Structures are given as structure tokens and as C-alpha cells.
Image 1 (tube, rainbow, N blue to C red):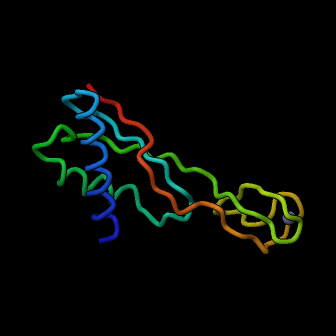
Image 2 (image 1 turned 180 degrees about the vertical axis):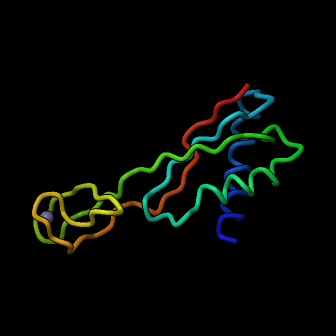
Length: 113
Ligand SMILES: [Zn+2]
């Protein structure tokens, strides 16, 4: 359900962008995803296959690029990046972190004809 509404959004953004460029077909949709966006790329692709039927995005491939999570350490005050498997301040090892990003899910670029 979550992925369905996200995919509708992605499709709309992509179709608008393609139309603005005068493109007739979208080959690839590149997405930027934070490690905690909670989105399953396979589901997005599955929904896109259905939703994009009859549009310039029909048959488009989803490419996901995971971006690191930016955090602010509450102990040493530095900003750093953490990954899903290593959630600690890269400078002092503290886990008292404030999340600055990581839930984003953006259309990064399109490959069009
Ligand atoms: Zn720190």
C-alpha cells in the first residue's frame, strides 16, 4: 500500500519531467533513497509495471541509489553519515544521534528518448 502511493507519485513526477523535455519514452527512472525510507524497490518496480501501462513510462526500469543517513551527534556535536548496519557516530562512537535525513525518496534523474 505504501509503495503503491509512492509509485503513483514517482510516475507522475517522471511523466511531468519527460513531457517538459519533450520525451516520448522513459527508459529508466533513477531514484534516491535514504536507508530508512522503508521502501522496497522490487515493489515499486512491480507497481510501476502496472501503473505505467499505456503511458510513456511503460516498460521503464527502476534504478535505486541508496544515499547515506546524515546525523548530528548529540555528544561531540559533529555531523556525519551512518549506514543501516553501522549506526554510531563516526567520530566518537556515540549512539545519541539526531537524524538529519534518511527517509527521503526522490526521483534523481530519468533516462528518456
Ligand atoms: Zn560523536
